[in-house]
Image (cartoon, rainbow, N blue to C red; front, side, top):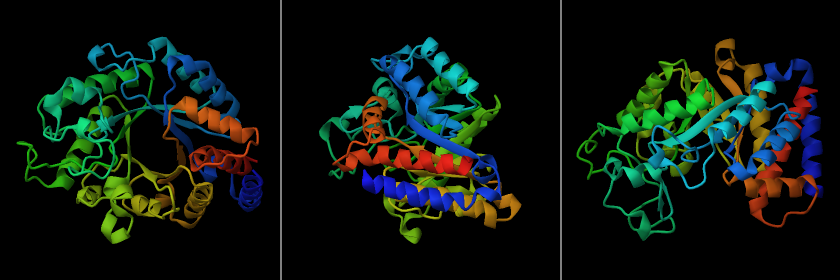
Length: 369
């Protein structure tokens, strides 16, 4: 805990030096958290967390990974066993509206249609949408494996997939009263597979860009913005970022093929890589995203403030801010976060996400003073 307090002290000192440059909204307009939506039993704790922790720290964006954890009426077959009701969502909507927080639902589209041995609802119920059905999730529990399976993808060219996908996207955006939707689209390793009769032999950058554009155009019909993770738009080999934070399968060329109003969530978790400027100079609005490294998260925020100061107005306007990410369920994360808040000494790396969020909160508070 002494290390955490030392980091925070240095951090606050550094950030205070930028206060005279403007208000927090001028310094870093987007201040977000991306986290899994709560379960019904976690609703009270979640709303208390929003009002008691996020609001005082000047957060103004909340991205909730809903996926199949909502009681969809358009496709009830896609519901997870435990789902939020319409009334649950409206409680979240009302608190966020009252507190000035933009609320954005997320459903993972294209990739992340499975995890470990579990095939998620879309491909479970509609196996005909699977980009590579011969690879079975039940065969593997870890990466790497002989089939190179990380997470399955749906086929973006299947003639029926968007009928189902857009039904649930529209429904979740309506109930969240959202003006934006996050489609995920990160870590897409399966695309243009040889066994797919529709995608085989096609340019993977064009396939990826086509799916981004199709989703964007559908959302735009109702005045909604598309948000996606940025890793598939970065060249993993040239940048040295590798195949996780960037692309080895040539989807990176899609950056020049997608609409310019797609919002990019540029995640880097070990270093504060400077790719946000790349997206902004390509004409795309972008926010840097961190996770478990408190030092890197603080640096990402400081860099974003600095980039906005040192860029031409057109580029600065696209350098939108910082979004923190949490990749566990809300309940386990809240237990870790409360332990850090109460100055209990964590002893494993799994606690770093709570330490990192505490650092981000203190940074935002310093910028807001």
